[in-house]
Length: 218
Image (cartoon, rainbow, N blue to C red):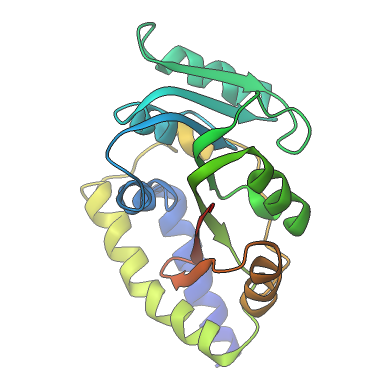
């Protein structure tokens, strides 16, 4: 059984290497649904190649993206139209955030690279009254419910990879070239720490090994 499982996992890994798709971008539209139709300013923390920042620009007067990876920031600038109200900064998401406050702060697949509670505190400090924080994060599976969700995600993951690549082998998207690291916090610890720093925050586990956190500044 162990040998069979190992073979299955290797086959899945090989399939996804040749049929990659961006799990984070899959949730960009969901993130937009948490936000007002029009906003003055937005900050995207861990902006990567800028896909979400450019989407935010369809609603915001000004969008700032910040990422610690200089190469991916350079690529984001290349991909962004000169007339777009979007700027990208290379910097530490905790200590070098461009001056705010911001009506919206988004953070996609980045907060597990940072001290979790410190990051939430810093985001709260840069959020304008009435502003919205949306985090799409990764968590470490630990409990049975986590593994059940993971198991349900596997066939959906294969199907999405096939659909998004139209059945063909495809190169890795630019948005997936930034450095990655595995999550270290389980979902229960994430919820507990989030509620301590952001009372009233709404957290929900999602398919494809992700969770969302939504919080409104009063």
